[in-house]
Amino acid sequence: VPELAVILTGTSLVPEQPFDLQEGDRVDITVEDIGTLSNGVTTV
Image (cartoon, rainbow, N blue to C red; front, side, top):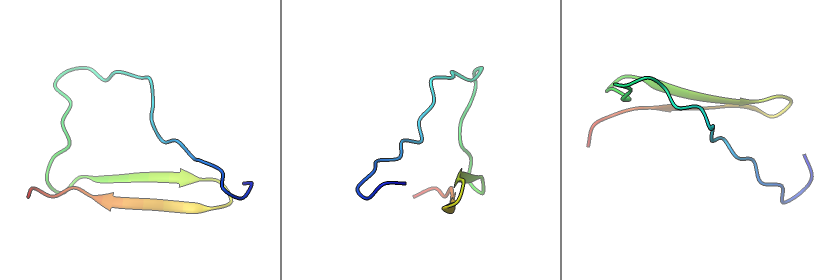
């Protein structure tokens, strides 16, 4: 990955309804040769 590169993690897919993130869900984003960013979902 070149220095100052921007990595986008969005998608143009639209999931079927209802589709909500729930407390306790985990969102993982993996980029080959870089690693995985993992975020838990919590209600605030």
